[in-house]
Image (cartoon, rainbow, N blue to C red; front, side):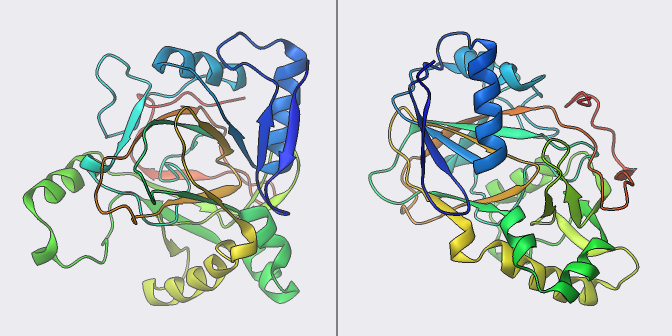
Length: 296
């Protein structure tokens, strides 16, 4: 094995070289990549020559593959691959993938298909670094909080600004309504690290009003998105990024003048989040069995 890691920032991200993702990984390489993901939270691979099948085969080294999304259509002929396409909307808000279900993906991969000539970066933030940076009183508060995550909420966009295509996209996204309660501080099952498990789908703190919840969530979120906690990845052709969905958030920057931008996403089935006191998340509404198995 000739795997080599080069850190990108102090708190998140590493470039990986010396491994051919198009070939089956031996156990030593798979374990080394898992450990690198645990440490660096996001891994960048250059000169990757994979099709949809190859991307799925790589992802399966880390666990079961989910279907593309609980409500959004997959790539034609590839039910486990989600097209992240500028023509179908943009995800320019901080989020962790699919936290509105009981067991969100443990990891996500994005592979570049069409790259705009400028802009279109993906920002990935370490919620573990954010938790470590909290002052002790805020950390103690966050440890005890639980938040309701949902895919059906007020997107803060006035109705008159939404065209027919956007309305159809929103209707499709909420065609099955999910509401799940997760710990605000999640304990990573492999490393024991604590991270802020919030993001755009977290809409209300259990026991607080919407207004009170928003102020607390915004305060905690401000630590996640500190510049020193963020990897700003500028896409090139034939790249793949693997990130730990348990302990990161990400954001697609809308700065490319609506030029074509397309990535393909494949995700690994996750476990049910656990909080500081050992309690598990619980579902209020929506069954995601058609989307994902539950990882052991």
